[in-house]
Image (tube, rainbow, N blue to C red; front, side, top):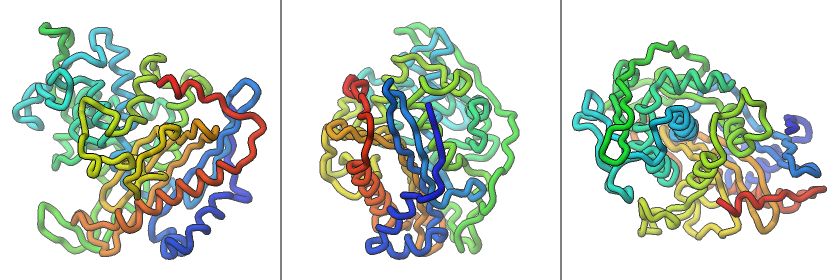
Length: 396
């Protein structure tokens, strides 16, 4: 696979500038909004092999942003990879998290699954389809903090610092700890994983970690910014690189690939792209709440209209502390369009952190949606010498 970074005649500059009339403040003050964008064009050679050209806007690997639920993408991939490496663990097997300090009563049931029990596969579906935090946390316990970070670093994702579970107020020591887990083959225990305690040092590797003018701690407002030095991080280039390796694994060197089978990738692609209305377990009958764009910010995040069947979006979004992120491979099967797009924007007009009052619906999601549409429309007109063969997507 041929890759290049294009910094001259950057089409992203033109596309961002074209959003001036709708988002004048964002376009004129991108640093205020901590705006970073990576867009990769995909061309094909005669063998249908991808040739990638990447354009960037505002990317600064030294500046912090909270990755929110985007960290669920590597956690999902690593959970599938670990299950493959442990012969007695099946991705669809029932598991039970035993009681302890985090889960006082343990975890043994999942009413949203067909069986009524939790499994890695069902957790992965919940993690993608509605960005469920509990599902992510179960996989965190299965993997362990040290394994997550060491494996990411081994693969070259050196910015990754996965420090904690999501949506749980836990101490550093509690996030180092994982509960014991039992896996079952029907009614018999097939694999027992003991509790683990992380020991790997996670240094702070970015700047600008204090954000906002004031913040809330357990309902009490405090002056001064919120310190993110103990929070998760993964910079934008690493997130962009991650999704490229997931979509095009065969075009990377063995040392840069996840240890997954073709069936593992098929499962991953299905769960990354499935829409709430397409799922039976769990089911989401309330379309007004769980509409197609619920976890698809690019192109459709600001609308409740149905996504055409010809358009497939393989992605993971993040939304927390005023940061909005999407990391996606976007395909239009009817028009032979395909591209990668990763972006983060921060919108918090009152500059108060952790008050759950952010500008997601008025600024961030509409901006990312329109950004996606602009790039999609550009791709519709972009000339390609060889059209892609996207039949593999039709088989998912």
